Each structure stands twice: as structure tokens, then as C-alpha cells.
Length: 315
Image 1 (cartoon, rainbow, N blue to C red):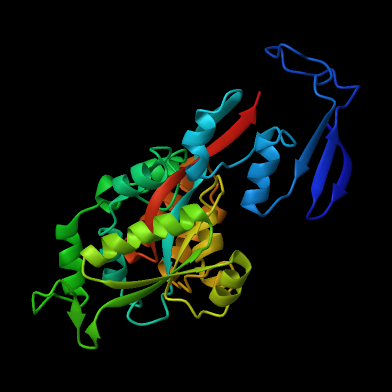
Image 2: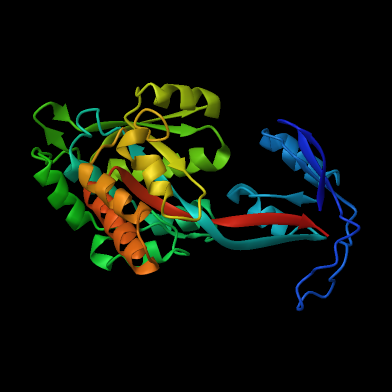
């Protein structure tokens, strides 16, 4: 295909290349595409996207939200396709804001999340439980020994809460520290799936003994607030197919920019340097895996879910 028109923020139009004749040997069609024109429309408002798709004005809907999976799967003439994603839903802690400067406390939250409940309740089983910071399509994820991965384990959580100085000393169901009962301001984007997921995580963390105030924001407003470091914790996600995303999101150099965790760790930065200048795959994998493990032991994020690519096609 060839670029025909690009209107920033509105649409991109591609037209088939009539001179294309170099398709791979296993392609059924090795010549010009059967489709004349493809228009990618940029529509931030979900309700508008749904209306266009359901009215036939749009034929493919990318990254379908979980609230529409069952409805569109049952809709005549519509197919819902899923496949491995390239990112993770996670809680990002502000590592410069007390009491979340404490790595044991951050990790305790990671062991208090029932990922299976989130996956099945919110995402209808589409996706995988998020046990670390990289999607399982990457060897830098699967090479991590299971002992470093997160799970729903309240015994481990209680031990980490205690290490951080928080216990339910008066048996009222809430964790207390020197400054009083533990609380968390948790922010999220105001899309349906993020709010539902946030409410479920809120309930789970409250069961673990943390007072949680959940606040949804429009995405632009949320990004402005986190850029200034006003947050305690945010439900976020990314899409990127390489381990380098960890440097982009958690490297010291990116604090106050893409590193909204405000996390700084010289040991992790050193692993980044080593993998950046690695001379072969084995050296690269050794350092990306070690850097990933280092992050997991420090807990700037609490992983929730490996998301899947979900596409609806009007046939």
C-alpha cells in the first residue's frame, strides 16, 4: 500500500500499490492487494467508535474493550479475533511519595491483587494474569525465575506489609503504621474497562487492609497531573514489543517524563547500559532479564494483566 492522505488527528488513507509484485512465495496473492483503499480513522470517543461500527460505517474496530466482547461475538456477521498483546496493565506507584517510597510496601500490594478475578470478571478471560513487567511473548519475561514473579498470595503480602511497618494491630481489618491506617489514592482513566478494573482492584486492596480512594480522570487531565508528580498510584498500561520499554518507563533519565513512577535505581540503570551495548544475543538477554528481575524486587509497579489484542471485524 501507498500513503494517499494523512490528516493528523483525523485519518490516514492508504491506496494499493498497482506495481506490487514481490509477495512471498507462500502468499496466495503475490500481486497488488485485493482491497483498493484502507482508511484508518482516529476516533478517541468510544461511543462514536461503536456507533460507526454498528452502523456499518467502520468495518474493523481495533482493540475492542472487554465490555463489548460478548455482545460483538454474538452479533451476526461480526467476528472477534484475539491474539497475544505486547504490554501489561499495572499499578504505577509514585516512588517519591510517602509511604510508597518503601519497596516492601509496594511489593505487598503486588501480592494482594487477585489477577484471576480481574481477568475473568473484567476481561471475560481474554488475556493472561500479569505476573511481571513484560508480556510473555518476550524471552526477557519467560526467562525470569518464578520466585520473582507476582501472584495472589496474602501470606507473602502480610509478611511484606509487616516488613514495611504495617499490621492490623487492633483486628479491625485495616493495616496501621506509625502515621495511622494505611491509605492509597488510586487514579485511573475514565474508560469503562479501566473504571471497572479499578473498582475491583480497590475492593481487593481493601480486603487486604488498605483504604483505597479511586478517582477516574479524562486521559489528558490524568497525564497532566502525573507529569507534575501529584499522584500516589495510577492504573496504567503500555504497548511495546521489546524489553527496552522498561528503560523508557523506569529509567532514571526519564523521571518526570515517561517515568511517571519517579523511580530511580543505579543498579537497574547499569543493566540498561549493559544490554544497550551488548555484543550478542546471550549478553543482551542476560542483562535484560537481570534488569527485569531487579525491578521486580523493587516493586515500582504492581502488575495486573497481560492484555490481548482484540479486534472486531464486520464481515
